Structures are given as C-alpha cells and as structure tokens.
Length: 400
Image (cartoon, rainbow, N blue to C red; front, side, top):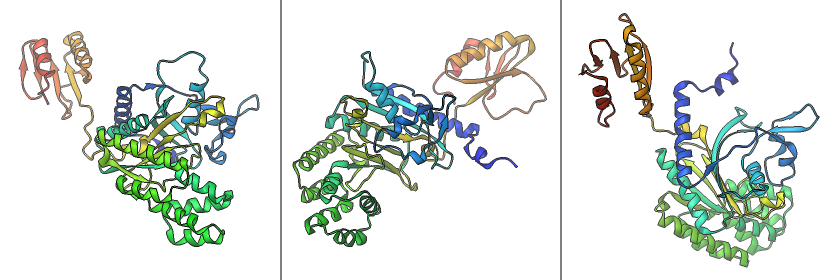
C-alpha cells in the first residue's frame, strides 16, 4: 500500500498548474507594487527562533542535528529570517520592499509543510504604507478571482494596553485570549470579576470582542474604551488607514475586528487576516512589527503579510482555464520545418508538443497542426499555403 501522507502531499499536473497560476499571479502583482523577490535558507539555526520572543512555538519546529552537533530547524517562518537578513545588510539596497515564495515547515500542520507567498516592507511607519499593503492584499485576491472574501483589520495596541492595566499572568492571559477569540462574552465577565479587576476595566475588556464589523461603527465605539494617550494615537492612526482604503476603493472588502488576536506576539500595530467564504481558516495573515528588528540590534519599522498558497488553490473559480496545448504533427520529411514552426509558436508564449505524424493515432481535442510537404492543415480544416500565413492567423487574438 502506498504511503497516504506521500499521496496527500503530491500535486498532480492539473493541481500544480493551479498552484503555478496562483504563484505567478501573486508575484506579478507584488512586482507591480515594487517588491523584489528574495529567498532564505531552508535550514536555519534553532537559536534564531528561540531567541526572538513571541514567534513560532519551539515545539512546533521540525529540528535536526548537523554533523557539528548544532541544532537546526526547517524554516518555520519567513518574516524572521528576512528581517534578520535585511537589517544586517552591509551594503545599501535600492528598496525595503521584498517579496518571497517559500515553503514553511511546522510540526502541527497535517502535511508538515505549506507554501506561503508574501511581502515585507521595511523602513516605513505611516498610514499610507499600511493602507497600501492591505490594498495590495485585496487587489491580489481580486486578480485571482477569489470569491466572497474579507480582510479583517485589528490593532495590537488596544488589547495589549488593556492587558497591561489588568496585569494578568501568562496562564490568565492565555485563557482570556481564548475567550476573546471565540467571542465568548458569557465567560469573559465572570472570569475577569473573579480576578478582582475594576468594573470599568472589566467592561472595556468585555467590549473588545464586540468591536467588530463596519469600520465607521467600530471606530466610533472604540472611543468608549480609550484609557491612554497611546490608545488615542493608534485609533486616530487606524482611522487614517481606513480613509486611505476608501480612496483605494477597496473598503467594501474591509471589516474592523479589534478582538483579532495573532499568535505571533511580535506584532506591534495594525494586524489583519483574510477570510474566504466556506473556509474556516485564514487565507492570509499579516501586520506591523516595528520592534522585531530590535532582536538584531537595529531599529527598523516594518509591516508584511503572507498568503497561504495551498488554500488559495482550492478557492480558484470552478472553471479554471489551463494553458492550451497545441499538438503539432509532422511528416518525417518536414521535421526541420516543423521544429522551427513549433519554436515560433513557443516564442509567442504557446505550449507546443511536436511529434512525428502517425496516421493510426487517435488525436486529442486540442488544436492540432499538421505539417506536410504540400500544405499545412489546421485541425479546424483551415488550410494555409505558407508557414508565415499559419503563424499570422494562429497568433491573432481572435483565434480560440
């Protein structure tokens, strides 16, 4: 019996065609916003992730020992190594806009690995930068024709500021996180009251999971939980980002969720996740992480996001148009001419399979070109006197 795990992780040609389409569409979109693609090593030092607080749980990492006895991990996250490489660059680079398509490895995933495509923007901390990145995420999904999706925008500061006032221990905070994420209002109030917190603080924490939905409504309601200058500053910042998203004309895809909690604790400002109808897990995640560079003795603001490529594949429209394959057949005496014709078509971005003509072969329904000594015949029975005439006709946009 074949190994089920192996079968589950294999992509058949049609599936891989979809994956290639997703990756090409995303990377093309990223490049149009000025992002340059980079790559990081598959194997990283364990200490890179162990020493940076609020990152991947070390128990989720796939570890191995190299011949020198050093502990390595298969890359469990892309943001951290990219941030390290960027902040430690000795030479100046033209841009702080970097993109990637990388496999991420985690012990908790069913297949142990998944492909992410994302961007990281270094050196800017402005509402304009945040809005541009979110707009890039929206337009990328529109380009892929992903149906019925939403980008939920949260903000790490509001919840963190209230937690600072509450002064909870790690266990208490983890339990409260679960209540907030599940919007379990009935459990939040008695849990917080049992901790002896002030009534006003309990009420503010209770409101956090309810600050969800229409952006204008949420921003107005958030005024009622402000208890510090920091919260006021960040609410104004969030409001500016939303105004910019309106100018990008992508606000119909946006909702605000101040109860949004990301497991990566290095996020310091705006955080966001993308959700598609019928799928219970995020198709993309991102946020601002201005202080992560401190782990590498630098002070570089940054924001980024990553799409889950393998999830997007299953969300592509039901009718997915694959590249058309042209079957070109030739008589043995016309082999050289057929090869030249095939190359001309490939140069025009067509896929061509050229084979010797076999009269007994049952041909596919794909467009077919027959190269004979006396003439060329297209499968739709259109005849051509010269190769140039065929190429001129076949390369026209109206040819199906």
